[in-house]
Amino acid sequence: MHLILQASGEDAAVVSHLLAKNPNNIYDRTDKGVRVRMVYTRATSSETEVLIHAEPDPVDLVRGSPDGYDITQYINDREFVTSSLFCSYIRSALGTALNGKPKEEYTKWVEHPFDLQLSFGPVASDLPDRVVEELFSHLGYAVTLEREELSYSFDLKKRSSVRRIILRGQETVQNALRQLFLLIPVLDNYKHYFISEDEIDKIKRYGDGWLETHPHKELIVKRTLRFAELIRKYESKEGRLSISDNKPLSAEDVENDRNELAERSNEASTEASTDDVLTDDLNELRYRAITEVVARLPHRQRIVDMGAGEGKLSARLATIAGVESILAVEPSGQSRLRAMERFAKLEGRHGVFAMPEPIIGSLFYFDEQMQHQDVMILCEVIEHIEAYRLDGIMNTLLQEYQPEVLIVTTPNKEYNDVYAMEQESFRHHDHRFEWTRAELAERCVEWSAGTNYTYTIQGIGEQVEGYGQPTQMIIFGRREEGHQQ
Image 1 (cartoon, one colour):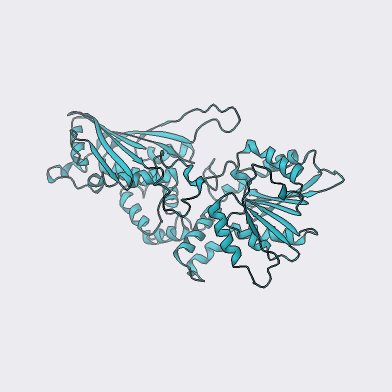
Image 2 (tube, rainbow, N blue to C red):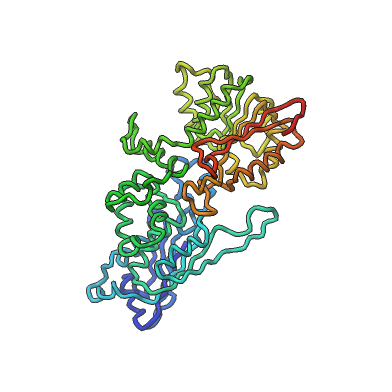
Protein backbone atom coordinates (compact mmCIF):
# COMPACT_ATOMS: atom_id res chain seq x y z
CA MET A 1 0.00 0.00 0.00
CA HIS A 2 1.47 3.31 -1.01
CA LEU A 3 0.94 6.96 -1.91
CA ILE A 4 3.14 8.92 -4.32
CA LEU A 5 2.97 12.70 -4.08
CA GLN A 6 4.52 14.69 -6.92
CA ALA A 7 4.79 18.48 -7.14
CA SER A 8 6.11 20.38 -10.13
CA GLY A 9 6.75 24.04 -10.86
CA GLU A 10 8.94 26.85 -9.70
CA ASP A 11 8.27 26.36 -5.97
CA ALA A 12 8.04 22.57 -5.85
CA ALA A 13 11.01 22.26 -3.48
CA VAL A 14 8.94 23.90 -0.73
CA VAL A 15 6.81 20.76 -0.46
CA SER A 16 9.51 18.93 1.49
CA HIS A 17 9.33 21.65 4.15
CA LEU A 18 5.53 21.35 4.34
CA LEU A 19 5.98 17.59 4.86
CA ALA A 20 8.74 18.31 7.41
CA LYS A 21 10.92 15.56 5.93
CA ASN A 22 14.47 16.13 4.63
CA PRO A 23 14.87 14.88 1.03
CA ASN A 24 18.38 13.69 1.89
CA ASN A 25 17.14 11.33 4.59
CA ILE A 26 14.95 8.25 4.47
CA TYR A 27 12.09 8.24 6.94
CA ASP A 28 11.89 4.68 8.24
CA ARG A 29 9.82 3.88 11.32
CA THR A 30 8.33 0.67 12.68
CA ASP A 31 5.50 0.97 15.17
CA LYS A 32 3.18 -1.81 16.36
CA GLY A 33 4.36 -4.15 13.65
CA VAL A 34 3.93 -1.66 10.79
CA ARG A 35 6.90 -0.31 8.87
CA VAL A 36 6.36 3.13 7.32
CA ARG A 37 8.89 4.64 4.92
CA MET A 38 9.04 7.96 3.11
CA VAL A 39 11.58 8.23 0.31
CA TYR A 40 12.18 11.17 -2.01
CA THR A 41 12.67 9.75 -5.49
CA ARG A 42 13.09 13.24 -6.95
CA ALA A 43 14.04 16.49 -5.24
CA THR A 44 14.99 19.48 -7.38
CA SER A 45 14.08 23.15 -7.37
CA SER A 46 11.23 22.49 -9.80
CA GLU A 47 10.17 18.95 -8.99
CA THR A 48 9.53 16.95 -5.84
CA GLU A 49 8.40 13.34 -5.72
CA VAL A 50 7.98 11.40 -2.49
CA LEU A 51 6.88 7.79 -2.00
CA ILE A 52 5.03 6.94 1.21
CA HIS A 53 4.87 3.20 1.79
CA ALA A 54 3.35 1.16 4.63
CA GLU A 55 4.07 -2.51 5.22
CA PRO A 56 2.04 -4.14 8.01
CA ASP A 57 2.65 -7.54 9.53
CA PRO A 58 -0.21 -9.70 8.21
CA VAL A 59 -0.32 -11.79 11.39
CA ASP A 60 -0.48 -8.71 13.61
CA LEU A 61 -3.49 -7.51 11.63
CA VAL A 62 -5.63 -10.21 13.27
CA ARG A 63 -3.67 -11.09 16.40
CA GLY A 64 -5.69 -10.36 19.51
CA SER A 65 -8.94 -9.86 17.62
CA PRO A 66 -12.04 -11.86 18.62
CA ASP A 67 -11.72 -13.93 15.44
CA GLY A 68 -7.93 -14.12 15.56
CA TYR A 69 -7.74 -17.90 15.84
CA ASP A 70 -10.18 -18.53 12.98
CA ILE A 71 -8.04 -19.40 9.95
CA THR A 72 -10.39 -17.57 7.58
CA GLN A 73 -9.36 -14.27 9.20
CA TYR A 74 -5.93 -14.64 7.61
CA ILE A 75 -7.34 -14.80 4.10
CA ASN A 76 -7.96 -11.16 3.23
CA ASP A 77 -6.57 -8.22 1.28
CA ARG A 78 -5.91 -5.87 4.22
CA GLU A 79 -2.14 -6.31 4.00
CA PHE A 80 -2.07 -4.96 0.45
CA VAL A 81 -4.86 -2.47 -0.22
CA THR A 82 -4.91 1.24 0.53
CA SER A 83 -7.66 1.64 3.12
CA SER A 84 -8.38 3.22 6.51
CA LEU A 85 -5.53 1.09 7.84
CA PHE A 86 -3.07 2.80 5.52
CA CYS A 87 -4.32 6.24 6.53
CA SER A 88 -3.83 5.43 10.19
CA TYR A 89 -0.34 4.06 9.54
CA ILE A 90 0.94 7.18 7.78
CA ARG A 91 -0.94 9.82 9.79
CA SER A 92 1.92 10.35 12.23
CA ALA A 93 4.46 10.73 9.43
CA LEU A 94 2.29 13.36 7.75
CA GLY A 95 1.08 15.10 10.89
CA THR A 96 2.83 18.39 10.15
CA ALA A 97 1.34 18.62 6.67
CA LEU A 98 -2.16 17.57 7.76
CA ASN A 99 -2.20 20.14 10.54
CA GLY A 100 -0.62 22.87 8.40
CA LYS A 101 2.07 23.59 11.01
CA PRO A 102 5.48 23.74 9.27
CA LYS A 103 8.35 25.87 10.52
CA GLU A 104 7.37 29.51 10.77
CA GLU A 105 9.21 30.66 7.66
CA TYR A 106 7.17 28.22 5.53
CA THR A 107 3.75 28.95 7.03
CA LYS A 108 2.83 31.18 4.07
CA TRP A 109 3.12 28.14 1.77
CA VAL A 110 0.41 26.19 3.58
CA GLU A 111 -2.28 27.98 1.55
CA HIS A 112 -0.31 27.88 -1.70
CA PRO A 113 -1.72 25.60 -4.43
CA PHE A 114 0.86 23.44 -6.17
CA ASP A 115 0.69 21.49 -9.40
CA LEU A 116 0.21 18.07 -7.83
CA GLN A 117 -0.04 14.49 -8.95
CA LEU A 118 -1.25 11.98 -6.37
CA SER A 119 -0.98 8.27 -7.12
CA PHE A 120 -2.23 5.68 -4.65
CA GLY A 121 -3.41 2.10 -4.47
CA PRO A 122 -4.30 -0.57 -4.86
CA VAL A 123 -7.82 0.34 -3.71
CA ALA A 124 -10.45 -2.39 -3.35
CA SER A 125 -13.71 -0.54 -3.95
CA ASP A 126 -17.27 -1.65 -4.59
CA LEU A 127 -18.01 1.72 -6.19
CA PRO A 128 -18.34 1.90 -9.99
CA ASP A 129 -15.68 3.79 -11.95
CA ARG A 130 -18.03 6.68 -12.60
CA VAL A 131 -18.56 7.37 -8.91
CA VAL A 132 -14.86 6.98 -8.08
CA GLU A 133 -14.01 9.51 -10.76
CA GLU A 134 -16.68 11.96 -9.62
CA LEU A 135 -15.51 11.85 -6.00
CA PHE A 136 -12.26 13.49 -7.15
CA SER A 137 -13.17 15.30 -10.37
CA HIS A 138 -15.56 17.54 -8.43
CA LEU A 139 -12.55 18.62 -6.37
CA GLY A 140 -10.83 19.81 -9.54
CA TYR A 141 -8.66 16.79 -10.26
CA ALA A 142 -8.17 15.03 -13.57
CA VAL A 143 -8.69 11.38 -12.67
CA THR A 144 -7.07 8.28 -14.17
CA LEU A 145 -8.07 4.78 -13.06
CA GLU A 146 -5.81 1.83 -13.78
CA ARG A 147 -7.06 -1.72 -13.40
CA GLU A 148 -6.13 -5.15 -14.57
CA GLU A 149 -8.11 -7.24 -17.03
CA LEU A 150 -8.62 -10.73 -15.67
CA SER A 151 -8.24 -14.01 -17.53
CA TYR A 152 -10.08 -16.66 -15.54
CA SER A 153 -10.71 -20.07 -17.06
CA PHE A 154 -14.27 -19.86 -15.71
CA ASP A 155 -16.90 -17.16 -15.84
CA LEU A 156 -16.34 -15.23 -12.61
CA LYS A 157 -15.82 -11.64 -13.63
CA LYS A 158 -13.93 -9.91 -16.39
CA ARG A 159 -12.50 -6.96 -14.54
CA SER A 160 -10.88 -6.57 -11.18
CA SER A 161 -12.56 -4.35 -8.59
CA VAL A 162 -9.07 -3.30 -7.47
CA ARG A 163 -7.89 -0.02 -8.98
CA ARG A 164 -4.93 2.32 -8.83
CA ILE A 165 -5.92 5.98 -8.85
CA ILE A 166 -3.96 8.92 -10.26
CA LEU A 167 -5.08 12.49 -9.57
CA ARG A 168 -3.71 15.61 -11.25
CA GLY A 169 -4.61 19.16 -10.32
CA GLN A 170 -3.78 22.33 -8.42
CA GLU A 171 -4.27 22.08 -4.68
CA THR A 172 -2.54 22.85 -1.40
CA VAL A 173 -0.61 19.97 0.13
CA GLN A 174 -2.71 20.13 3.29
CA ASN A 175 -6.04 20.01 1.45
CA ALA A 176 -4.89 17.25 -0.87
CA LEU A 177 -3.88 15.04 2.03
CA ARG A 178 -7.02 15.79 4.01
CA GLN A 179 -9.16 14.91 1.02
CA LEU A 180 -7.36 11.59 0.66
CA PHE A 181 -7.62 10.78 4.36
CA LEU A 182 -11.39 11.22 4.17
CA LEU A 183 -12.03 9.68 0.76
CA ILE A 184 -9.75 6.62 0.79
CA PRO A 185 -11.83 4.94 3.54
CA VAL A 186 -14.97 5.96 1.62
CA LEU A 187 -13.66 4.15 -1.47
CA ASP A 188 -12.72 1.00 0.40
CA ASN A 189 -15.76 1.20 2.70
CA TYR A 190 -13.82 -0.49 5.48
CA LYS A 191 -13.08 0.77 8.97
CA HIS A 192 -10.70 -1.15 11.20
CA TYR A 193 -11.70 0.70 14.34
CA PHE A 194 -14.80 1.43 16.40
CA ILE A 195 -16.76 4.20 14.71
CA SER A 196 -17.69 6.84 17.24
CA GLU A 197 -18.63 10.52 17.34
CA ASP A 198 -14.95 11.32 16.74
CA GLU A 199 -15.68 10.55 13.08
CA ILE A 200 -18.04 13.53 12.98
CA ASP A 201 -15.21 15.83 14.04
CA LYS A 202 -12.92 14.26 11.45
CA ILE A 203 -15.46 14.90 8.69
CA LYS A 204 -15.74 18.54 9.71
CA ARG A 205 -11.95 18.95 9.97
CA TYR A 206 -10.88 17.13 6.81
CA GLY A 207 -13.94 18.20 4.79
CA ASP A 208 -13.60 21.88 5.63
CA GLY A 209 -13.84 24.04 2.53
CA TRP A 210 -14.91 21.35 0.03
CA LEU A 211 -17.30 18.75 1.42
CA GLU A 212 -20.26 21.09 1.88
CA THR A 213 -20.61 21.67 -1.88
CA HIS A 214 -19.58 18.22 -3.05
CA PRO A 215 -22.38 16.51 -5.04
CA HIS A 216 -21.54 13.18 -3.39
CA LYS A 217 -21.56 14.57 0.13
CA GLU A 218 -24.40 12.23 1.08
CA LEU A 219 -22.42 9.16 0.01
CA ILE A 220 -19.26 10.38 1.74
CA VAL A 221 -21.03 11.03 5.04
CA LYS A 222 -22.95 7.77 4.92
CA ARG A 223 -19.89 5.60 4.25
CA THR A 224 -17.81 7.48 6.83
CA LEU A 225 -20.28 7.39 9.71
CA ARG A 226 -22.03 4.13 8.75
CA PHE A 227 -24.70 4.25 11.45
CA ALA A 228 -27.98 6.13 11.20
CA GLU A 229 -27.60 7.34 14.78
CA LEU A 230 -24.27 9.05 13.98
CA ILE A 231 -25.57 10.42 10.68
CA ARG A 232 -28.47 12.07 12.51
CA LYS A 233 -26.07 13.58 15.06
CA TYR A 234 -23.92 14.93 12.24
CA GLU A 235 -26.95 16.43 10.52
CA SER A 236 -28.12 17.88 13.80
CA LYS A 237 -24.76 19.61 14.26
CA GLU A 238 -25.00 20.87 10.71
CA GLY A 239 -28.43 22.29 11.52
CA ARG A 240 -30.44 20.22 9.08
CA LEU A 241 -31.60 16.71 8.28
CA SER A 242 -30.72 16.30 4.63
CA ILE A 243 -29.05 12.94 4.23
CA SER A 244 -31.30 10.30 5.72
CA ASP A 245 -34.46 12.32 6.30
CA ASN A 246 -37.40 10.54 4.66
CA LYS A 247 -35.09 7.91 3.12
CA PRO A 248 -35.28 4.24 4.01
CA LEU A 249 -32.07 2.70 5.33
CA SER A 250 -30.52 -0.21 3.51
CA ALA A 251 -30.55 -3.68 5.03
CA GLU A 252 -26.85 -3.45 5.84
CA ASP A 253 -27.34 -0.01 7.46
CA VAL A 254 -29.96 -1.48 9.76
CA GLU A 255 -27.79 -4.46 10.63
CA ASN A 256 -24.78 -2.21 11.28
CA ASP A 257 -26.87 0.01 13.54
CA ARG A 258 -28.07 -2.99 15.47
CA ASN A 259 -24.54 -4.33 15.92
CA GLU A 260 -23.13 -1.02 17.06
CA LEU A 261 -25.93 -0.44 19.52
CA ALA A 262 -25.30 -3.88 20.97
CA GLU A 263 -21.61 -3.07 21.35
CA ARG A 264 -22.27 0.26 22.99
CA SER A 265 -24.69 -1.01 25.58
CA ASN A 266 -25.80 -4.24 27.17
CA GLU A 267 -28.87 -2.61 28.64
CA ALA A 268 -32.25 -4.13 27.91
CA SER A 269 -33.54 -0.98 26.25
CA THR A 270 -32.03 1.61 23.93
CA GLU A 271 -32.66 5.28 23.45
CA ALA A 272 -35.91 6.20 21.74
CA SER A 273 -33.96 7.73 18.86
CA THR A 274 -32.89 4.28 17.71
CA ASP A 275 -36.33 2.67 17.83
CA ASP A 276 -37.27 3.67 14.30
CA VAL A 277 -34.00 2.19 13.02
CA LEU A 278 -34.72 -1.22 14.48
CA THR A 279 -38.39 -1.38 13.46
CA ASP A 280 -37.63 -2.35 9.88
CA ASP A 281 -34.84 -4.77 10.67
CA LEU A 282 -34.83 -7.06 7.65
CA ASN A 283 -33.29 -9.90 9.60
CA GLU A 284 -36.23 -9.86 11.97
CA LEU A 285 -38.64 -9.92 9.03
CA ARG A 286 -36.81 -12.81 7.39
CA TYR A 287 -36.69 -14.89 10.56
CA ARG A 288 -40.37 -14.27 11.16
CA ALA A 289 -41.33 -15.22 7.60
CA ILE A 290 -39.25 -18.40 7.67
CA THR A 291 -40.55 -19.55 11.06
CA GLU A 292 -44.13 -18.93 9.92
CA VAL A 293 -43.57 -21.10 6.83
CA VAL A 294 -41.93 -23.87 8.86
CA ALA A 295 -44.67 -23.80 11.51
CA ARG A 296 -47.28 -24.51 8.83
CA LEU A 297 -45.45 -27.49 7.31
CA PRO A 298 -46.90 -30.95 8.01
CA HIS A 299 -43.35 -32.38 8.32
CA ARG A 300 -41.06 -30.19 10.38
CA GLN A 301 -39.49 -32.53 12.92
CA ARG A 302 -35.94 -32.41 11.53
CA ILE A 303 -34.46 -29.10 10.37
CA VAL A 304 -31.09 -28.07 8.91
CA ASP A 305 -30.16 -24.37 9.19
CA MET A 306 -27.33 -24.16 6.65
CA GLY A 307 -25.00 -21.20 7.18
CA ALA A 308 -26.46 -20.68 10.65
CA GLY A 309 -23.90 -18.07 11.69
CA GLU A 310 -24.40 -17.12 15.33
CA GLY A 311 -27.57 -19.21 15.58
CA LYS A 312 -30.19 -16.48 15.63
CA LEU A 313 -32.56 -18.21 13.22
CA SER A 314 -31.91 -21.64 14.75
CA ALA A 315 -32.92 -20.26 18.15
CA ARG A 316 -36.19 -19.05 16.64
CA LEU A 317 -36.86 -22.42 15.02
CA ALA A 318 -36.40 -24.10 18.39
CA THR A 319 -39.66 -22.49 19.59
CA ILE A 320 -41.81 -24.12 16.88
CA ALA A 321 -44.03 -26.90 18.21
CA GLY A 322 -43.30 -30.27 16.65
CA VAL A 323 -39.64 -29.60 15.93
CA GLU A 324 -37.43 -32.36 17.31
CA SER A 325 -33.92 -31.62 15.98
CA ILE A 326 -32.10 -28.65 14.48
CA LEU A 327 -28.65 -28.89 12.90
CA ALA A 328 -27.10 -25.41 12.94
CA VAL A 329 -24.42 -25.81 10.26
CA GLU A 330 -21.64 -23.20 10.13
CA PRO A 331 -17.98 -23.31 8.93
CA SER A 332 -16.74 -20.43 11.11
CA GLY A 333 -15.45 -21.52 14.51
CA GLN A 334 -16.02 -18.11 16.08
CA SER A 335 -19.63 -18.01 14.90
CA ARG A 336 -20.25 -21.50 16.24
CA LEU A 337 -18.94 -20.47 19.66
CA ARG A 338 -21.35 -17.55 19.74
CA ALA A 339 -24.14 -19.86 18.62
CA MET A 340 -23.30 -22.26 21.47
CA GLU A 341 -23.56 -19.38 23.94
CA ARG A 342 -26.91 -18.42 22.47
CA PHE A 343 -28.24 -21.98 22.57
CA ALA A 344 -27.08 -22.46 26.16
CA LYS A 345 -29.48 -19.69 27.19
CA LEU A 346 -32.37 -21.70 25.73
CA GLU A 347 -31.95 -24.61 28.11
CA GLY A 348 -34.87 -24.94 30.48
CA ARG A 349 -36.72 -22.05 28.91
CA HIS A 350 -40.48 -22.47 28.49
CA GLY A 351 -41.60 -22.88 24.89
CA VAL A 352 -38.37 -24.37 23.56
CA PHE A 353 -39.11 -27.69 21.85
CA ALA A 354 -35.67 -28.64 20.52
CA MET A 355 -32.09 -27.65 21.37
CA PRO A 356 -30.18 -26.66 18.21
CA GLU A 357 -26.93 -28.55 17.65
CA PRO A 358 -24.06 -26.45 16.24
CA ILE A 359 -21.96 -28.48 13.79
CA ILE A 360 -19.14 -27.79 11.37
CA GLY A 361 -20.27 -27.94 7.78
CA SER A 362 -20.23 -26.31 4.39
CA LEU A 363 -22.15 -26.38 1.15
CA PHE A 364 -18.91 -27.22 -0.63
CA TYR A 365 -18.65 -30.78 0.60
CA PHE A 366 -21.14 -33.60 1.04
CA ASP A 367 -22.38 -34.58 4.51
CA GLU A 368 -24.62 -37.62 4.67
CA GLN A 369 -26.22 -36.62 7.98
CA MET A 370 -28.01 -33.83 6.11
CA GLN A 371 -29.79 -36.23 3.77
CA HIS A 372 -33.57 -36.64 3.83
CA GLN A 373 -34.29 -34.01 6.46
CA ASP A 374 -37.74 -32.46 6.70
CA VAL A 375 -36.65 -28.86 6.20
CA MET A 376 -33.41 -27.31 4.98
CA ILE A 377 -32.93 -23.53 5.15
CA LEU A 378 -30.42 -21.24 3.44
CA CYS A 379 -31.16 -17.78 4.82
CA GLU A 380 -29.13 -15.10 2.98
CA VAL A 381 -26.46 -17.64 2.02
CA ILE A 382 -26.40 -18.17 -1.74
CA GLU A 383 -25.42 -14.58 -2.61
CA HIS A 384 -22.14 -15.15 -0.73
CA ILE A 385 -21.23 -17.93 -3.19
CA GLU A 386 -19.78 -17.39 -6.66
CA ALA A 387 -22.66 -17.72 -9.11
CA TYR A 388 -20.84 -20.27 -11.26
CA ARG A 389 -20.75 -22.70 -8.30
CA LEU A 390 -24.44 -22.45 -7.46
CA ASP A 391 -25.76 -24.94 -10.02
CA GLY A 392 -23.65 -27.70 -8.51
CA ILE A 393 -24.69 -26.78 -4.98
CA MET A 394 -28.38 -26.68 -5.85
CA ASN A 395 -28.03 -30.04 -7.57
CA THR A 396 -26.55 -31.48 -4.36
CA LEU A 397 -29.37 -30.00 -2.28
CA LEU A 398 -32.23 -31.16 -4.50
CA GLN A 399 -30.82 -34.42 -5.86
CA GLU A 400 -28.60 -35.68 -3.02
CA TYR A 401 -29.85 -34.21 0.26
CA GLN A 402 -33.50 -34.25 -0.89
CA PRO A 403 -35.22 -32.44 2.00
CA GLU A 404 -39.00 -32.44 2.05
CA VAL A 405 -38.84 -28.64 1.85
CA LEU A 406 -35.95 -26.34 0.93
CA ILE A 407 -36.27 -22.66 1.87
CA VAL A 408 -33.87 -20.13 0.32
CA THR A 409 -33.81 -16.35 0.81
CA THR A 410 -31.72 -13.85 -1.16
CA PRO A 411 -31.80 -10.09 -1.84
CA ASN A 412 -33.98 -8.57 -4.54
CA LYS A 413 -31.60 -6.45 -6.60
CA GLU A 414 -34.39 -4.21 -7.91
CA TYR A 415 -35.10 -3.00 -4.38
CA ASN A 416 -31.63 -1.47 -4.13
CA ASP A 417 -33.03 1.53 -6.00
CA VAL A 418 -35.45 2.08 -3.12
CA TYR A 419 -32.43 2.21 -0.81
CA ALA A 420 -30.89 4.84 -3.14
CA MET A 421 -27.85 2.63 -3.61
CA GLU A 422 -25.28 3.23 -6.32
CA GLN A 423 -25.65 1.16 -9.47
CA GLU A 424 -23.60 -2.06 -9.49
CA SER A 425 -23.11 -1.88 -5.71
CA PHE A 426 -24.24 -4.69 -3.41
CA ARG A 427 -25.91 -4.56 0.00
CA HIS A 428 -22.95 -6.30 1.61
CA HIS A 429 -19.27 -6.26 0.71
CA ASP A 430 -19.12 -10.07 0.62
CA HIS A 431 -21.99 -10.56 -1.84
CA ARG A 432 -20.89 -12.17 -5.09
CA PHE A 433 -24.13 -11.32 -6.90
CA GLU A 434 -27.63 -9.99 -6.35
CA TRP A 435 -30.50 -10.94 -8.68
CA THR A 436 -33.66 -9.28 -9.89
CA ARG A 437 -36.94 -11.12 -9.47
CA ALA A 438 -36.87 -12.21 -13.11
CA GLU A 439 -33.29 -13.47 -12.84
CA LEU A 440 -34.09 -15.52 -9.75
CA ALA A 441 -37.21 -16.98 -11.35
CA GLU A 442 -35.16 -18.04 -14.36
CA ARG A 443 -32.62 -19.80 -12.15
CA CYS A 444 -35.36 -21.57 -10.20
CA VAL A 445 -36.73 -23.01 -13.46
CA GLU A 446 -33.25 -24.36 -14.24
CA TRP A 447 -32.65 -25.74 -10.75
CA SER A 448 -35.99 -27.54 -10.52
CA ALA A 449 -35.85 -29.00 -14.04
CA GLY A 450 -35.41 -32.77 -13.89
CA THR A 451 -36.11 -32.93 -10.16
CA ASN A 452 -39.20 -33.93 -8.22
CA TYR A 453 -39.57 -30.42 -6.75
CA THR A 454 -41.96 -27.61 -7.42
CA TYR A 455 -41.38 -24.13 -6.05
CA THR A 456 -43.03 -20.87 -5.14
CA ILE A 457 -41.42 -17.45 -4.79
CA GLN A 458 -42.64 -14.80 -2.39
CA GLY A 459 -41.29 -11.54 -1.04
CA ILE A 460 -40.31 -10.44 2.45
CA GLY A 461 -40.40 -6.85 3.65
CA GLU A 462 -42.15 -3.67 2.57
CA GLN A 463 -43.71 -3.82 -0.90
CA VAL A 464 -42.88 -0.92 -3.24
CA GLU A 465 -44.68 -0.79 -6.58
CA GLY A 466 -42.33 -1.54 -9.45
CA TYR A 467 -39.57 -2.80 -7.16
CA GLY A 468 -41.17 -5.64 -5.23
CA GLN A 469 -39.89 -6.44 -1.73
CA PRO A 470 -36.32 -6.30 -0.39
CA THR A 471 -35.92 -10.06 0.11
CA GLN A 472 -36.97 -12.94 -2.12
CA MET A 473 -37.89 -16.30 -0.58
CA ILE A 474 -38.06 -19.51 -2.61
CA ILE A 475 -39.83 -22.54 -1.17
CA PHE A 476 -39.01 -25.81 -2.92
CA GLY A 477 -41.42 -28.63 -2.09
CA ARG A 478 -40.69 -32.28 -2.90
CA ARG A 479 -43.29 -34.02 -5.03
CA GLU A 480 -42.77 -37.75 -5.43
CA GLU A 481 -44.89 -37.87 -8.56
CA GLY A 482 -42.31 -35.73 -10.32
CA HIS A 483 -44.70 -32.91 -11.09
CA GLN A 484 -42.68 -29.83 -12.13
CA GLN A 485 -43.64 -26.21 -12.29
